[in-house]
Image (tube, rainbow, N blue to C red; front, side, top):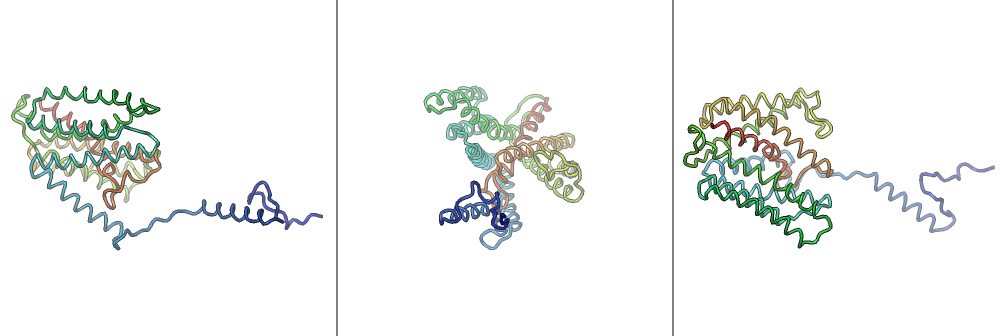
Length: 331
């Protein structure tokens, strides 16, 4: 009669090795050890180096970053240009880095050169330093990307070009249109563009509204969140949070209209709604990108906050709508 105690469980190994041999025993031990290591979860330290908690790190970097952003926008148009030049550059580097983790091969250097050229040219034209006809130099610059691909000799030229252009469309153009919004006050005098006038109020006010929307959504979602907004992409976002963010953003837009008079109240209210709607979509779009790559953050350049795309994802999708509204409503 067979002794059941000597039967070796099938799950431990297959096929069953010869237990009489040292080799068989070693195989069993190695397989069990491997199985155990696969089931272990990686623990991430709750405190970063320096003894600061994640919340403390977020607060410190948030205050420092917020001060630099507000000061750069407020001081003059050239500090605004330099500030968002750096943000655009780092965001593009971060975006192409994400693409490369998915085994795609965008033409990073060329994409960054084209993206930064678009941003710089847009600023210089809007500021009145260069004539607007130089906008027609942009299409030939972009077309050079296709010619370059012929000489690189990569296996998937269509994919390489597509992902390179995606970085330009997703990052460089929205930040360039933020420049258009910053100078859109020049069009408010009857339908005619006067002398280029930089308005820090429009840019800074838009950021205040974005931050108000994000903060209102976070705290409202924590307190009242029940109904999922887009669970497939972002399980934590709720309709209650979005409504709370909209209420706070609209309230801030009213307060802004009392001090920032470059826009009338009704325009501030519409800008607020555009930020709430398309800023939320921007957040969801970036979340879908990260989810497809199985990443929590787009980067780690901002301590406690992730990457630049994590901080400006809402602005990237809202900026084109803000610029279009402000320019078109000027007439």
